Image 1 (cartoon, one colour):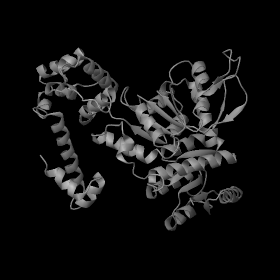
Image 2: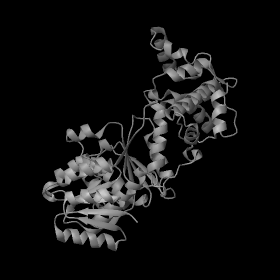
Image 3: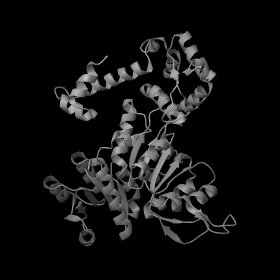
Image 4: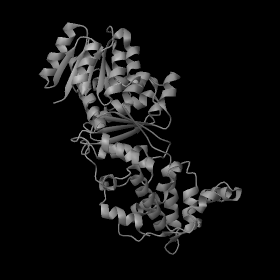
Length: 451
């Protein structure tokens, strides 16, 4: 049973919230000011804290800072009047999960509490929510590099929750694939995953997202993506390009979990997890007044960064193998990638990221001869850029580390590197290192010493 601490200097609100939460089956405790709340936190553990902002002698922001410093995994929801919304947004910058305006609606309060507790479970390692995902469940995501291993760990932790997620990454880096993985390994996996790019006119975008009543802009009624994805996930790509007026309507949906179709007046409840993505950071856009700051904080409850392909070279050759296998089928014999071609793939800068690599592999498979992929099978611009870099001396030293290595030898070398790094991070505890790597102790020694 989740335990919630309620902090407010108004006795009527304190008693009301206490009765509501107990009636909903939560364990509740009350504190009439910040000092008493800190005293309770010293002796009791809570999953969530509801705190008023305007209190003395310790206001809600100061209480938030002190509580978060000691109990970083505890969720915090701020209660505020209309006149202090800016302060509430500031509280979210300090780590608050969300804020609720007074006078509050019971359904909005309970929904926000539910979302905050889901987030708490996701980030605190709750055993029921965050059991380790077997490696085969993340099939399709190549993660030899440290950066992508962190992405997979995040997927494992937060997929079970319904918390809103904001994914950053360059175009083609794999943001939608990550969003699909979050959906695939969540309780919503049997429902619909819908995706839309947010660029375009407000009228067209709102019609697609929220739906449209008959005769508003088109002859027939149109069902929007929120309704189509009911019980599932809606992926909003390039959220930073969303028109400002549409941002306002999306914020309302995130707050109330209700939509109103374009041209209509009736509201419909929706149960959809929102995953947003952007190729540029949203904070500068909020500073420029191009993106709503309150919407930004609603979307970025959890943020993930997908590293560009040029920063995870360990993934390039395994990705190439994965793409060939997917294109040719599980039983086909894959063409060999000769050493010169491997070096070109590894040392190209990949400005188009994984998407560009996939196009290159598709061409290479089409142009492969005698079961082998040579550099002539790759797009000419990729080969030319790498060869120009070799002539200028900018990548000679990098090529040396891969010289004379087959794909198998390269992967074995990377495996040993990962094993050694893990063992060194846990000095004197090889058993824990083996467990961390998902291998037996005997297997760990064998892999370290194998040629």
